Image (tube, each protein chain N blue to C red):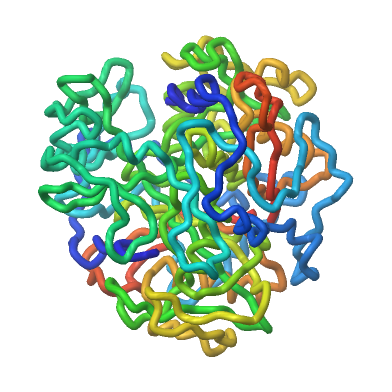
Length: 290
Length: 290
């Protein structure tokens, strides 16, 4: 199920970030280790000439863009803290305790650093955290399996089978479940392939596994119009549903060219001022590989 | 901040799993790809002789254990579904809508497969999803940085700096923030090292990065009694706070022995019938490497 994923991308604009302590961003850095760290063991350098279609690998020190009206920045650590913390304004929309129904107040609890919704009756704190979206990149006969979406957003566009991880299942189990739901395919998870954080749109992290069909049988589930195997040269890059899928498939194709499938970590950030529906208007920041 | 992580490990027992459709578990499999999949590119086989201290790599078809009274199993997909879905009984504790305060009902929404808490007034659905715990394995002069906990659970025991990922930050940013909060250390994230799911205790996924100190300065934050660099042979394996840290440090030490640091994915499952406080009483299932 990937019904609401990246909905915000279609409904929110972008604005310049606002910092309580603007200087703090200068302390943040995440580097491509191959460029900043001597090789240890068999750590591999990232090929600086790697040029992925539609991927702009930008090495900023911190984000320049954020989602308007829904994210604000805050630092409640002491002045020497090198990390500024953004908090979601969504916390202010939590007006009631989900357990006892009492009204909430919005304060920084004792011993914590961030504003939370705290019940004024029972004292319980409601936390909000990023969600994981889990999916499979399914290889079969040198092709990959994609699903054409039967639901909004991105109705009619192609995606890997993926959806929110549920409580009580591992990421690999969730990825297999989503594959069944969307492509009626039984798969075997082979290896982790990518973790792609999208912290400023929908507070999501994509966890994508390489997988293979246990038998060459698949058909569209209720959320798919069609499921199809695509040869690499036929992948519909112009009709993909989400930036995360574009990044994943680009990395996969590039890895195959180099003859080695790696594990990729990165952050997808929308480029300021671009159309929310333009899935190519992003940068892949802090791209690390193992 | 890692205040409440694995609290359930100290408060819950284990019981045999309960299935609505017991046969379904026979459909589930996640294999060590090196054993079940021909090499592709430079995928590496997992050394079957790899014997990590305290790690029992079990290749079950599905979990045999679950947390008593807090997790139940459900499958609402059609009969041909290969995936049984566990849902958390915690959803039944959500009695009120956090947005409007209306009472909730617990039903399967139209078009979904799982029971949710649905507001009877505004209709909004409250979802529950696993949380990410992000942390750093910090290398410095062939030593690793550990923190002695100043808070419960596991007061006085050693851990990597780690805590819950917050909305609005990437996993790497969250890991750096936690490192600052717990060890007052500025670090540079080098590469992803491990994703360890703990689906049956606390619904958590650990995301651990390799990192290095930007300068050799650190000191305990409020949640730490002490921070110290340990040579590999001095790592206090008998005084670690959590199974997740034991697994991570074991994998790290074993990787160094082989001369190559890899990315590890796996699921930590508590062994049935063992003491919740025994952090060695687990199995590392579905261990995959990239």
